[in-house]
Length: 505
Ligand code: NA7
Image 1: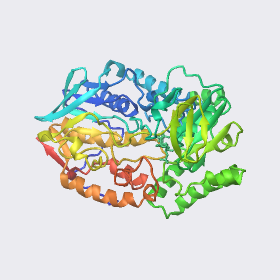
Image 2: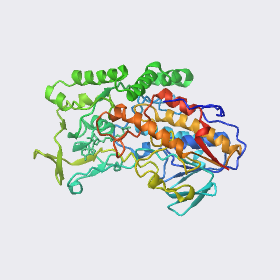
Image 3: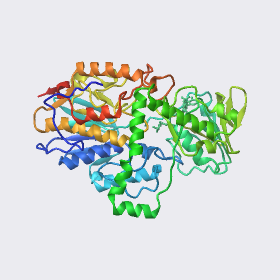
Image 4: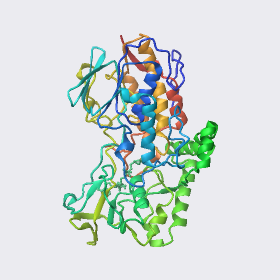
C-alpha cells in the first residue's frame, strides 16, 4: 500500500500516551472485552478521569467470557496474546486455555482499577452525535454524554445458528458452542458436533475419550496447521517471574514473529513462496498423520490453505482416528428428535448436539443504533458492507473510534497487538482534541472512498478471496480484512495522516 504519511503528523509512542491538557473530556467505551479493557486502561493511564465503560453483561472478558466450551484455547502463543503493559509470567502453557485467559482479563481490569468505571448490565440501545458530542442511551434508559465514543464491541459475538431442517426438533440438549449450558454432562454421551472451524476442532479434541462417541459433521474439510502445545513447568514460571526478559524472549521470539510476518505476507500474496510453505506444511501434516487413505481424502479440502482461517491443532488428526470418533462428510439432510440424518439416509443417533457453526462476523457494534452527524444512520452507511477508514473511523461519525473494526487485520496472530497499535493511532487523534485543535474529528468521504477502493481491490487478491466460504467474506464475497502486510499495518498505525481527516471546530 502507498505511504500516506505527510508532514504535520504527530509523533507519539504507539502505547498511546500523551500529556493531557483537557481532563474534562468525557469518554464512553462500549464493551469490556480485550479491546475495551485496553481502551479503559490507556485512557486512565493518560490521566482522563471521565471514562465510563459500558458492558451489556455482568462480567468482563468479551469472547473469553462468551465461550466456555471444553477444550477452548487461544491458538496464538499465550505470551504473545498478552497486553504489552501487563505481561503474565504465570501462563500455564504455551497456548493458554480459555478460562485462564478470561481470568487474565479480569485480573488486568482489577489491577488497573477498571471495575470502578465499568457499568455492567448496560446494553446500549443507541448513540447519537449532535452539537459535537455523543449521547449514549442504554436499554435500561440510562443516558451518558461523551465527547468521544470508543466501540470495542468485538467481532465474533453473534452466534450463527445453522439453517438446517428440523433444528428445533432434537429431543436432547442442542446449543451453540458460545452458549454453553452450565453443568452439562457429556461423559459417556453420544455427542454430535456440527462445524469444523477452530471451535469444532477444539471440541472434538476435548470430548474424544470422554464422550461415549463423538460424531463430527463436516460440511467442508479444513486445512489443519500442526502446532505444539505444552505446559510450562513450575520451574519455568518461577524463572519467568524472576526475569521478565525470559517472557519477552517468548513474546518476541523470532520464530513466532517470523511466522506472523510470513503469514501476513502470504495472505496478501497467494503466489508467494511464503504461502507455498504454509500449504506444504498443511499438506504434509495431512499426508503423514492420517493412515487410512479414504479418511485422508475425505479430510482433504478442495480450496487453498489459509483461505478459511487456518485451524491450528496439536491433535485433531490423532483424535479423528480413534474408534470412538467418526467424521461425517455427507451433507446433513435434517435434524430429528433422535439425532442427525444425512442426505444418503443414514441416521446418527445422538444424546447431545453442539452447533459449532460460527458467528455473524459482519455485525460489529450493531444492533446498536448509531446516528452520526445530521442523523446519518450507521445501518444505512453499512448497508452494502461494514467499512471504515483503516478499520477505525468513518465520515459523519466524528469522535467515534473502533478497535478491531471492519477491514482490520484478522488471522492467525494476536489481536491484542493489533488493538494496541490501533490505540496508538487513535490516541494521536485524541491528542488533537485534547489540545483544543478541534472538538471532533473524522475522515473525509474522499479519504474513505479512495481507501476502500484500494482495500477491496487488494482484498479480492488475498488468499481469503481465493475461492472458499468463510467468515472473512462480506455479502459480496469480498474479504472484509486488512489485505496488506503486517508491516504495512504497523506503519499506517504509527502516525495518522492528518490530511485525511476533517476537523470539526
Ligand atoms: P467458523 O470458523 O466460522 O466455523 C463454522 C463451521 O460451521 C464451519 O465448519 C462451517 O462449515 C460450519 N457450518 C456453518 N453452518 C453450517 C450448516 N448449516 N451446516 C453444516 N455446517 C455448517 O466458526 P468457529 O466458531 O469454529 O471459529 C470462529 C473463529 O473463532 C475462529 O476462526 C477463530 O478466529 C476463533 P463451512 O466451512 O461453512 O462449510
